[in-house]
Length: 248
Image (cartoon, rainbow, N blue to C red; front, side, top):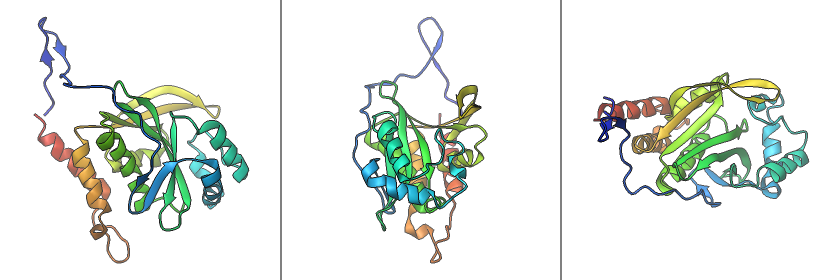
């Protein structure tokens, strides 16, 4: 059931109150540590060589197609990009480091950080082949969502991508994001148009989704061969459906 709007003294519908609201803190430059991966602020000296080697495992560069950058020619070029483009606070870039090996295998960032509105986006996600479709990749997204909602108290967590990027759109739904629509001709990158697909999770959805992620990541959810017993897509879909059925 959808929430009925309240009315002001003039009979006009207005949004629900947000009692005690205050601007949220900006994300800190501290690690986020899980069972499989550790996220830490991206640094050229620490991460560029590992990332270049990991990205080079897919020589076609297909995982760069929908990013704003092209594949890097060498580790030095990647390091230069980190130094010139990834040292600010928004976007706030993180390296995704595999805990068992200590190798950086991917990148993700918080961006469009709006403390006053309590809105934050995840983006610039680039996962090397060794990280794709692993529990560590999912855990990295779970850790970032947990920081935004549980640690910092944000109200809205966004995912945006090129509307033609089918893998990214599937990933958003699998993680529990709700599709909100297409912004047509939203931007131009690499000399081409981008229609942008918007997805989001809001704070009242997060507890159920967090439980779904924790259930999926539990070692008991995987058989001795490492195959999942329950899919995250099913768990997050059921969590959202249950949440919607109890909304007044």
